[in-house]
Length: 177
Image (cartoon, rainbow, N blue to C red):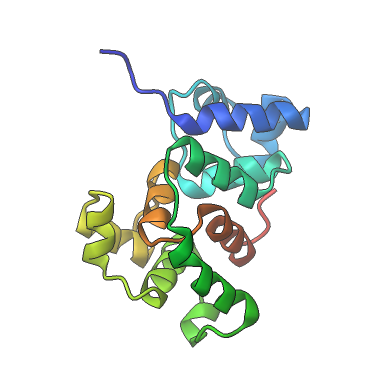
C-alpha cells in the first residue's frame, strides 16, 4: 500500500509556480525550512494550518481563493443555504458580536466563535467529520493546531465557507507574508 499524498502540496505547488518564486524564496519568506517546503510540495508532508497560511501568504496568494479551491479539491462544500444568512449578518454588522469576537487570536478561537454563532455543539461538529471530540476541544482552546486538511474539514463541519473563514483568520493574525 502506497503512502497517502497530501492534497495541499499539489495546490500549493501551483500557487508557488504562478508566483514565480523559488522554493528557497518561499521558505525564507514563510519562515519554514526549505526541506519542509520540498516535502510539502511533493505531498509527503502536511503543514499545520498556520504554516499553510504562511506559505500561501509568502507567495502572495489570496487566502479566500486558495482555501475555497482546496476545499473543492477535497470534495468538501459548505451548505450555501445555511451559510448565507450568517455570512450576510457578519458582513452587514447584524450578527451579535460579543467581546469574544474581538479577542480572537487564532484558528481555535475563530472556529469556536463561528461554531457557537451557528448554534452547533462541539459534539455535533466532531461527529460531522468523524473527529475526536477531545481533539476538537484542544483545538478550540488553542492547545492543539490541526493539520491543514483537518482544519478545512472542521470549518466545513460548522457549515462555513472555508475561503471566507481563512480570509477572516488572516485578518486576526499578524501579517503572514
